[in-house]
Figure 1: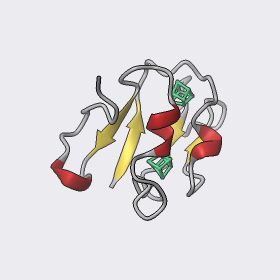
Figure 2: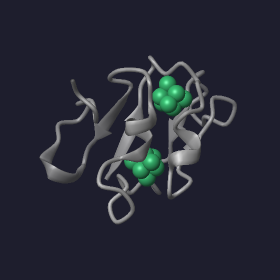
Figure 3: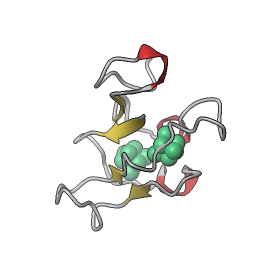
Figure 4: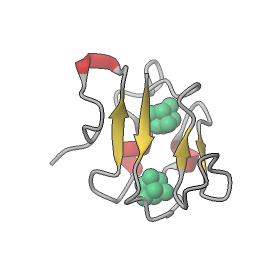
Length: 85
Ligand code: SF4
Ligand code: SF4
């Protein structure tokens, strides 16, 4: 289970300190080399047990930036935005 940050990330830093599992790193530490923030899929829990919904996505000002990454909870589709209007 995990969420993923997509390439529309504006590197605003709003999500990083919200993560209860310290799974988010900034663009300088992104292991993929992309100039966006990154979620470690090995440690992201989708906030299960900590928050009612993924705190990073709730904090993110960029609509649709943070998406579910399979296998995820609740049968969410890979790539589906965590927060949808
Ligand atoms: S869903 Fe929760 S655990 Fe996963 S990266 Fe976002 S804030 Fe961290
Ligand atoms: S809050 Fe959203 S736009 Fe800002 S750094 Fe995190 S993923 Fe990127």
